[in-house]
Length: 401
Image 1 (cartoon, one colour):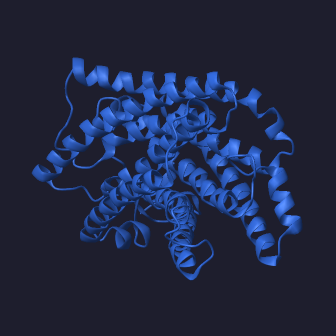
Image 2 (cartoon, rainbow, N blue to C red):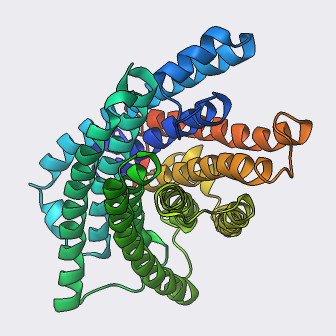
């Protein structure tokens, strides 16, 4: 068998390598979000972090240094992978493989590009908050720019997905037998990532007009997400009941986990803006029950996905064995999504309702769950990067379908 890298056979699903790294930068930002005081602001910024570093004890300082390092590393990996993908994607579009790809169900995988682009914009915004002094003083001028950037990505996403929908609605040819996964929910994930970026000004801006625009734009995208995900979920389950599941695409069975995180944050951002500017306040109890429902959905699909992956011996085959599949990167998103939403559930749900005291033994027990999953996802990213982009070796690469 000739020596090669799995990434030598390009697939747009490699954009998930950029997405996963960007998501991990958010998990480190959660440390700063909930452990660094930031009075008068919805998120911590450079000045808050420096003040906490100067006045904090050794544990606080170690946490901040760890968060800084994690954010810097994974934003770098996010952008590095994004550039690699954009370069290779452009070359791939000139091949016969690309033209054949456009005639299959997998055409919807092109939505991995706007998904990754939106994640990178979100990641850069986080990096700006954490590393750029004085950014908060000009943040109101940045919100219109951010909305414009996400609007451009949204237009690109609608055009990309529109070509896929138009083809199958006019020409037909959608292969239901090959739809035995939740891969068709990927476009909903992309629109959700754009939508959560659109919702950021709702949580941070002091301008009612900007907040209102942010809420409307993110609501439009949220409705789009729910329609696409609802149809794709039903079609996917029907196909799985008829044809079983496919080992290579089995990781998509947990795509609802990160989707719940993104939608949850989107709605919490909207709720904050509605409370501050439009007198529609949510209570701590309402937030707790909302987050409890979202976490419950995640746990249900985690158990479902874990069961199917175990039946396929997925880890033994594609993570530790000789087979490789680009779809393995889809396993990073559920872990990252759970970690982020778990942090919100702990702090905005359990702590805010006084069910758990902050820094109590029970609190650290819940935090330990999030940190263990976070560490596992970091290890998974480096494992996958080594297997797909490391030194060429004899492997049996499995293309995404």
